[in-house]
Image (cartoon, rainbow, N blue to C red; front, side):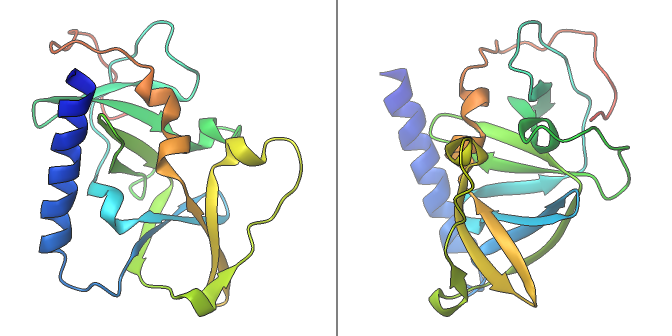
Length: 181
């Protein structure tokens, strides 16, 4: 019952966001993780923000660095580098959180930098590479050629699945790490 109400709220929020978006030709939000360019569907993006204070949670999945209080909502924060098994990198002014909407909650994706909001068409689409074990875990839903580079579009539901497992209460604990990751 609670899941269906949360799902309805998410769908209503997506519909409101879609109506507010001015340029319907811009369908992806681009970002970098390491040297690779990725994107997520603009319709799934709630907001792009600077990192906030994070509260670590015991027994959380490895890619979940904790939760943050964003506009009175407790948001799980998923480090995309950790999710992909990449080494940690120093956080810079370019480090951002992309708040994306999953079926039942908002999740913050920690990325190295946000590049642009852009549009692609079917003529830009390339086949998703299959490289063996782990293809499903990588969560790549599409590949596009854009400005001479390959852009890997992530399936936010698969990438953020670990955050769906995180149980958080309405109150935030008092200890936190300021602005990290």
